[in-house]
Image (cartoon, rainbow over all chains, first blue to last red; front, side, top):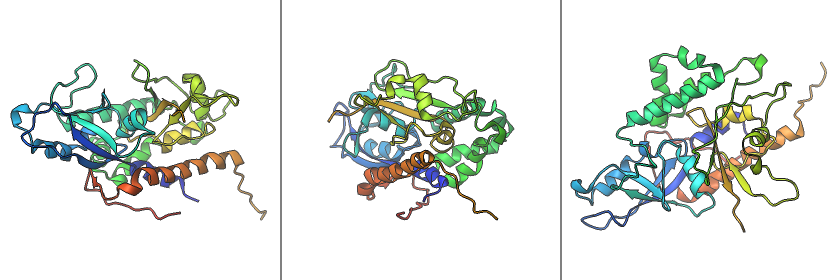
Length: 275
Length: 52
C-alpha cells in the first residue's frame, strides 16, 4: 500500500502534455511550428513558458511582439490560477495533448492580469501562502519564518525542487494535535459557468461536535448541487488535481495532501460529460 | 501483549485507496504516452516511481 507521503510527490510531479500553437492572426516571417511541452500542474503558465516564447519569437519581428498570453477555445487562460486548475476547469475530458493558443497582441485587459516579470508571480504566490496561513494558523507560522525561508518556498516552486519546497512547507502543514486540524481550511471552488471567480468562505476542519469535516460537508455548504442524490444522474464532476475524491474524504487530509504549493485546496466543479 | 488490531474503518480505507488508484490512473492518462515531450522546467531530477 502506498504511503500518504507518496501523494505529495504525485501531486507535485503531475504534468499536462500541451501543444502550443500560434494564433492565426499573428504576423510571422515564416510558418510557426507547434511547440510541445510537459507543464507542471502545480505551477503557473507564465512561469514555465520561456521555451514557448523563445520558440515563437524566432519567426516573428520584434515590432509585432507584445505581452504573451494564452487562450483555450476562446477562453483567455488566467496565469494566476495554477495550470492544473485551468486544465481541469476548461479542458478535462478532452483529448490530450491540451491544445493552447499563443497570442502576442490584443491582450485581453478585462480577463487577464498583466505579468511583466516573474516577481509578479512570486508576489501573487507568496500572498496566497500568507492568506492560507492566516486561515490555518492566524498567520503565525509564515510570520515566524525568515525572509530566506519564504524564498525557499518560492525557489522550490520556480525550479521544480520538491525536497527544497517541502522542507519548508511541512511547517505550514502542522497543527496542534488537540485541535484535530487547521483553524480554517484554505480552499477555493471554481465553476466554469459563473461570473464569480471562485467561492471562498470560512470553513472549519472539524465540526462543532468535534467530528472531522469531509469533502461532502464542504460541498453541502458551498455548492449543494454538486452532491448527487442516489436516484438521479450525476450532474457535476468535482475535480482536485484531475481526480474525483470520494465525498467521505476528510477535508483536513485533503488540505494537507492535495493543496497546491500556494497552500490552497483548489476544487473545480464542472458539468458531467454526457455520454 | 495483546494483539493490536489496526482499527481502520472500511470507509477510511476506501477513500484513501481510491485516491491512490485515481492518481495512478491520472499518471497513465496524462503522462504515459507523452514521455518524449520536453519538460517545461529542466532542473528537476526526475524521480520515477516504480509500479506498485
